[in-house]
Image 1 (tube, one colour):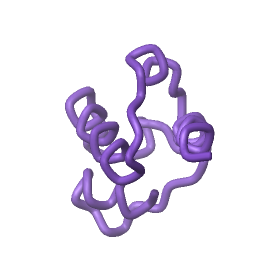
Image 2 (cartoon, rainbow, N blue to C red; image 1 turned 60 degrees about the vertical axis):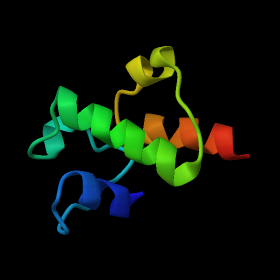
Image 3 (spheres, rainbow, N blue to C red; image 1 turned 90 degrees about the vertical axis):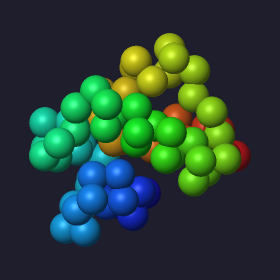
Length: 71
């Protein structure tokens, strides 16, 4: 997952944790958020509903949703 963030934000120094939010990463705005969601969907072969995307408050929420879809 960290690799996806590094690619989307073009920053190899990013280290995410479940508590990471958009405020913690330079350049994480609405456009990069869409790019991140698309990259995650592509990487894991899943799709998020708009409702799911709107509920993500941090990386932990995103990871939990991914885990529920890949099992």
